[in-house]
Amino acid sequence: MTQESRPDSPSEPLTTDAVTRIVLRPIASPLPLGFFALGMGSTVLSSLQLGWVPAAQSSILLLLVLIFVVPLQLVGGVFAFLARDAGAGTALLLLGAAWAGTSVTSLDSPPGKPVVAQAVFLLALVPFVLALAGAAVQSKPLFAVLLTLTAVRFALTGLYEADLGTVFQTAAGWTGLGIGVFALYGGLALLVEDGKQRTVLPLFRRGKARESIEGDLREQLTEAQQEAGVRHQL
Image 1: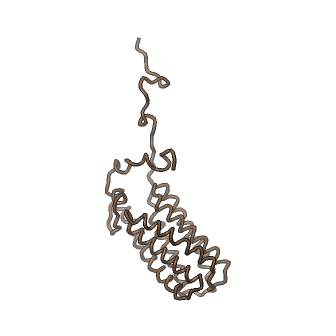
Image 2: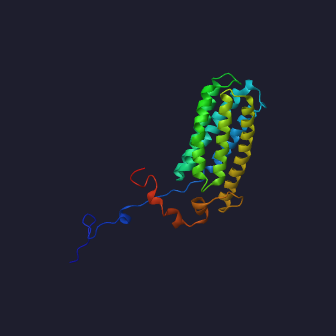
Image 3: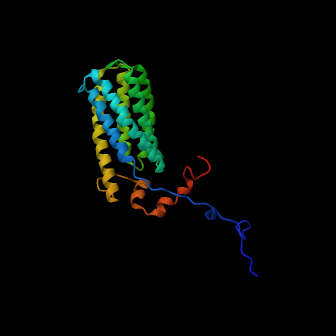
């Protein structure tokens, strides 16, 4: 009589491959949404900094930033984490929260007047955004340039809020328009790439970011066992 092997008394020790299964769920890239939201918010605030919109109407623009820009960046950041891109997720959530914080505090401040407390916040934020840019430069240089420009804008705005002169406000406004143009190109390039499943407009991907587009599935999954949510500790 042949004895069947039972699950509770295996004849051989179970290996990790036998008891572990990693499930990955494909999602759409959130980066185009994050790029467009950042570019839109930057352009809107530049119109205020450059005096194209009267200071008396600043509350309307700030409310539009809170309603339109902030939620889109937060959604983009959450889905970037779900897509296993910690750098993009951190950047989008950090910027979304920064937009929300500065917009709310500006609503409670006199229009057109520098606010020292905002200067402290914006200048303190600069090195963190630069750190994110430095982390992105090896694989996504386009994203790194966008983050660097954003850090420059935060620094210029912070110097204006420290009451060091309106020249910094003007410089921040023009930098913001540059961010808007740059974000428009980046978002469009990412959308075209996603639709064609290949890079059409240059994104200058390198390293792991380039492998994510040109590599096969095996290359994508090789290091999944070391990622957060799979490994035992962060």
